[in-house]
Length: 147
Image (cartoon, rainbow, N blue to C red; front, side, top):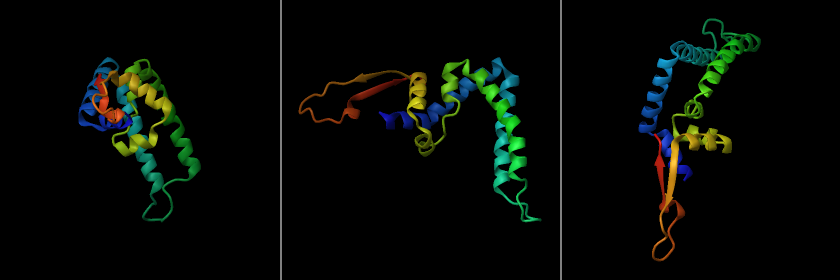
């Protein structure tokens, strides 16, 4: 069942459904949505620069102290926006789902799995074993997705 969930989360249909839900949320609170997107872009750009060196001097673009000082207020704004997002439980569980199956597996904790499953899974039908009784359990599971 884990593989079916991971494949669903990494699929195009899920990405489109999540994007649609996030657009609806953004329409309800455009300022927060815009700030969250801008802050995430800014943090990603700063992280990229932290990993690079200034080609002129050969030194890092900024020190670790500067990085921490710049990063803290951005992370605080992201946390505040995500707290507002958390008031929408379906979106809160899905907002930080990774894009690829490998990234999902890397971040897949029991608590994360529970939150995501509550948001995307309506129910699972377990089919009968049938003749021989040697079917893999996963072959008998039919998930009904909410996305």
